[in-house]
Structure formats: C-alpha cells, structure tokens
Length: 258
Image 1: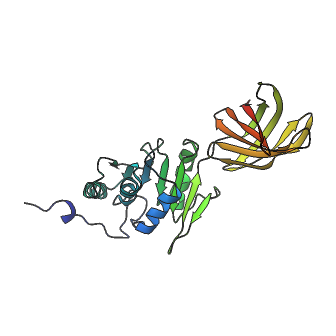
Image 2 (image 1 turned 135 degrees about the vertical axis):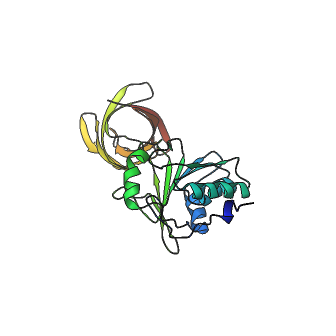
Image 3 (image 1 turned 30 degrees about the vertical axis):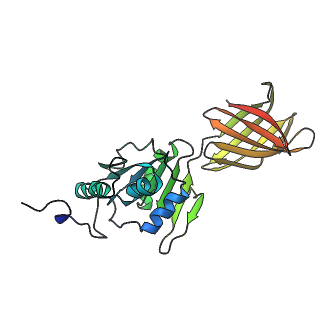
C-alpha cells in the first residue's frame, strides 16, 4: 500500500507558501490571542492562513467555539483537517483549501491572522466592513496606521488585537425619552478614534472623551444646567440608543444620523 497522509507530507518551518512562508504560531501565543479576543462557545473563529490548523483547533478544543481555517496549500489543508480529526473537533472545525482573498469570512466574530503587513493591509477594507465588535488578532504584524486596541506580549514576538468599530462619522440628532430632539453631535472618525462637537441650546461645545468600541459610542458633555453628563449609546447603522447619566440619575436617549 502506498504511503499516505502524514507519511507523505510533513511541513517544514520556513517553507514557502503562496504569499508567506509557513511558521507555526507558538501554542502559548495561540492561547493568549484567543483569550484576548474573549473567544467563547458563541463565537465563530476564522483563521486566515490556517497552516496545520492549530489556531482553529485550539478555538474549538479549548474555547468551545466553531472555527474555520482557510489554507491555500492543498497538502497543508489536508494535514490541518487530519489534525482536527485527531483532536476530536472535526465536527466544529472546517478546513477550506482556498485563497484568503476569495473566501468569505465575513460572518466570523473572531478573526485570526499570521500574515505579512502588506497582506494585512490588503485585507483591511474587508475587515473594517465586518460586523462592529468583531475581534481581530494578528500575530507579529500590525495594520499600518490602524492602531491596535491591545498588545499581547510574547516571548519572541507580540500579537495585536483590534475591535472592528461601528462607523459613526457624520451628524447625529439626539432626542430625549419623549422623542424630543434637543441636541446635535458632529463626529469625525479615524478607525476607533473619534472626535467632535455637540450643539446644545444654541451653543457648541467639544465632546469630552469620545470613543467608539465595537457598537458602543461614548462621550461626555456639559448639560444646560452645568451638569457633567456621560452618554453611552449602542449604534445600529444610522440609529443609536442608550442613556445619558449624571451621577445616579440616567435618562434614555435615542439618536439618528442624517
């Protein structure tokens, strides 16, 4: 009987691939990346450039997630599938022999990468179009001027975490609990960093400490009575809702863009 499976293919660290050489992510860093992304049973993890499948397998085996690995090399993809079977997670891990620039990974809630900086940059528009709140973790390489939300320190190389931000730029009209519009805010945005102004009672003021984290938009402002209020809104496309709080007193807010 001719040799098959691992008997005919065992990858060598540093071997050439389509766009990158293969180097496996250390197991300790795999675990740290998935923990930083708060991976859990409700998540679907997509690993781009799956190699031997170790990240997708760890996501399923150790964190209870469902996972998909995309690997261009047919022999490596077959090895990853065998590894998933050996780990007992083949029912929750799918290995796709495919091109990371052609496969659809948009439904992932956690995305993992170990690619070159230029590949990260090519993928960045697709990543930013994913559902706000999607967690993205890259080993070793960053996303150029999209700064990470967290750095995960490693013994050899670091990893980086981003939370896909909701797009919030533009003018929003803010209404109170009775639906009465009482203010507008104008927001500028660069990835997860935002700034802007509020027009309230005919006066304009800068928003204080504005931020966007996934679908959450937050800022503080000075109310008409001089009180310092903190607003937290959940963004859903061109609408948002949440509260404005002054100490223990909170009022409900809604907002509409456009």
